[in-house]
Length: 180
View 1 (cartoon, helix red, strand yellow):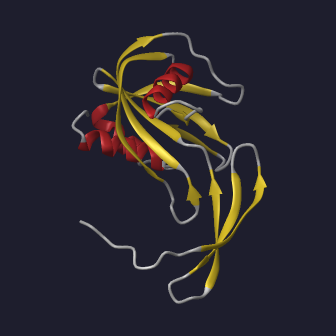
View 2 (cartoon, rainbow, N blue to C red):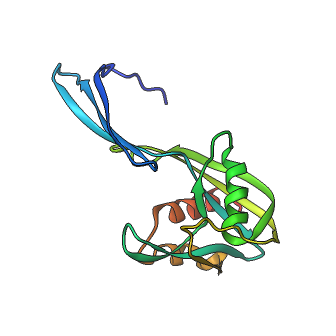
């Protein structure tokens, strides 16, 4: 399906209003199709990767407290893509660091924009298999435990409150690709 953009939405002004070291926030003032102008606010975050890691008939999950929502979350391993890394390289690294599993193979399932109404943030979902135990290397702000969930229960577990969008997306994409 081909779609034509009917208006260019020119940016009249762009401003970064704050930077936190974790993300930047600001706005773009754009000219809308009717000629009026409006500020569209955004937060810009680095790319992230989510890892669907299979070991036998189970998926690897991490259990950690998320201070932003003040909830304990059971979710797929995930992290930031560092400069120069692909999603697959970042996924293998994050899996090793967070869970202590080194994958023999990692493949990209999907990459996409997240929350396009407010975020400038891309996410990659990768599938990891052939897991060998290694030592974990947690960051100084990572306090998490590792567990496994049977593949057939993974979506139900992911949908329990507090549900996590990245975990649900990862499981659904892996199912759609036929790797679960």
